[in-house]
Image 1: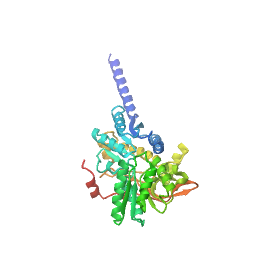
Image 2: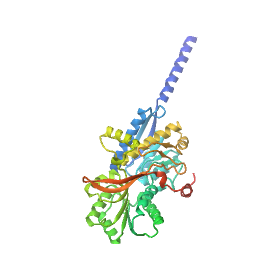
Image 3: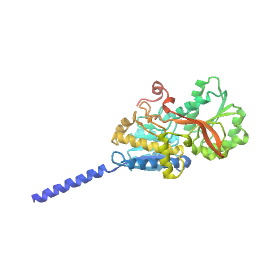
Length: 400
């Protein structure tokens, strides 16, 4: 009897040991939400980027020995659907954190969910300043350079232009409204002599380019700020070229140098626009070379900016989880505040004061080369150089 009892106890200890090993060799799940069906030009390269990152993380041993698993959902471009997806990922899939989103209004919706449910959220793409400032919360961090940061980079060049009469064209939702507001503020501070003579607010994804171009031309600006992207940008450029809107006028344009938006313009690409973007073909740094080589080897294709964002989102998530060595949201927050890590654009840091990363952007000009649009004279602008002071941020962001 005693021998049988000892055998039984030994078996129990062995089973417990096996269970412990299974836990040690288990997995950590991340929830990922994006507008795949609505904006495939950006989100498909983005998905390729994060899938490459997952492979690399797991090939290097995962998260402290645990396999990294990403469970992805499509929000269809609807804030309510994004919140439903977030709830399913947290309640049914037990994910350690939420990542992703593209549109600014959706990013804000998921950020609000994260704050209410006390879930860690790493916003990948949404650019509205509200994410980290006026509607910022302790559970939300952001990877991409914000509207403020990109506007500050563009204003640095735009302020050198002789133009005094400016018009703006932007999609009428959170992102466009935020971008125009901060560009106007920063530009007017540097150039109090300028006038804002017209604003056009077409609905996102549904621009009627003819009347927009006609209205801007009627205001007779010397320069134009453009914030449209995707299919809206193509329609605007085509109509603007046809009607001569851009002749003799300077244009400053958010995002237009990103391959996902520049490539579709082909030989219609207007030359000389001042833009933020991603000239992957001109970046010669060890960090980027390593990423480019791995991406092209896996996909036999060149990366878009979405590829960088998707890749770095998962790399950041993995670094956060590894440092925290826990899935507890409070420990994830503590691990992320002040955390530095490599990226294809060089080292970045998540600031403690507002949870904004210091990832920068390339600024240059559009040009035509072999019948397609490219970025030329591009320079990388570090995010740290284009953020307001801590004192200013303290006024902009509510206390946790």
